[in-house]
Image 1 (cartoon, one colour):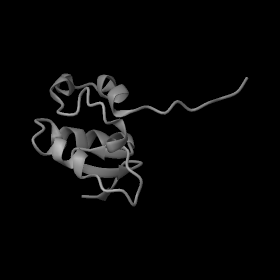
Image 2: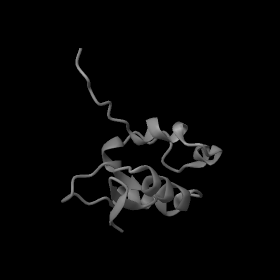
Image 3: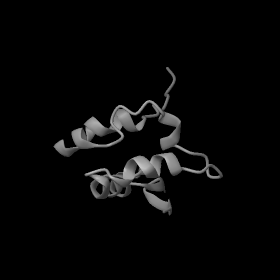
Image 4: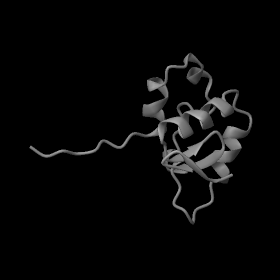
Length: 86
């Protein structure tokens, strides 16, 4: 038996939150999944632009910090829950 880690995307994680407000997320259903998980040298302007007017931007960033997420959350980039780029 082999143990494999399942890698979740933003779309997979949103419904796992205890907040019902995730339904309002500006990124929900966005087909550009790679934009939410940029390489360190890659710009994340697209994701920041989508997040700019999101009604749950603050909660999204808090979720990332509190649950150790990586990728773009709330318009900022996180690495294992620590904000690394604004």
